[in-house]
Amino acid sequence: MKKPILILAIESSCDDTSAAIIRDGEILVNLTATQNIHEHYGGVVPEMASRAHLQNIVPVVTAALQKAGVKKTELTAIACTQAPGLLGSLIVGFNFAKGLAQGLNIPFLAIHHMQAHILAHWATAPQPQFPFLCLTVSGGHTQLVLLKDFFEMEIIGTTIDDAAGEAFDKAAKMLGLPYPGGPLIDKYAQLGNPNKFEFSKPEIQGFNYSFSGLKTSILYFLQKQVQANPNFIHENLNDLCASIQHTIITILLQKFIKAAKQYKVKNIGIAGGVSANGALRKRMLALEEQGQFKVFIPEFQYCTDNAGMIAVAAYQKFLKGKIDPLDLAPQAKMSFMQF
Ligand code: KG4
Ligand code: ZN
Image (cartoon, rainbow, N blue to C red; front, side, top):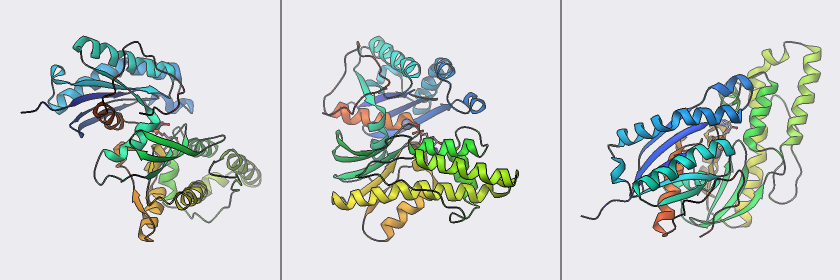
């Protein structure tokens, strides 16, 4: 019987330590240790994130192997996120993964975090056909990416200032909500009126995005209202969350649909942490119901940072025969890997 391709994948680019195991393209386990310490600081504290990764990495990898019933000696290759991300965080996962690959004398695979977010669409069925247009919306990035194949990716639009997740998190902070505010805005928005308050939308040419104008418009609006009524935010929290969320999603989708039409792409999808947003998912599904597009949305566990998506990318990279040398270093920023 042919030996299966078994890859252990590690993700540690920001504040989640995650390990996943994939066998012949099927994810057996996807485990993540989330770091709650950052909540109190209103954002991820890089030094604390690195320390927490150091504490979490061995228990998370051990638990993943145990849960999958896989022995280290059965592994075919080890994969890890190389970039982009917080350098101190990346170093922990990357060095651990390289050490394990060297110790087991098996191939090492370096993976690009943003490409992996997109390839999360191949973690479960149904899987998109190429060409595929993906809107990747995370805490640090907003990218419109056209895929002709797994690693043939072209960024056709990106943010010129804040990322979509950052817009959620900064708005949440102004509303007095803890970090990360995106999921909380999502939660309160479910009880609010999305058309209660109106905020400015950017007018940027082409397929690029901008969210800094919206941030300023929310700030000035809140300052004015709170001056007149100190309880304004508390009394209107649900409507504020719903209206801010509605504005961010409308900005995202207007360009996305325009790009899909211009590039004549039928298969479209969302990826990254913000793709966990309930209202965004609903509006994407509504697009499919209108009959123009086939819409793909990853399962929740593959939206926010996770090693499952790294495992999918690693499996595809391995199938292409691409493995990496052990003198490779992680990078805070890096353009897409093309094969
Ligand atoms: O992809 P991700 O987990 O990490 C990065 O690579 O940045 O994305 C994190 C971002 C944060 O800004 C977080 O607030 C946002 O995703 N996010 C959400 C939701 N869940 C996570 N934003 C809106 N609604 C959500 N349900
Ligand atoms: Zn991410």
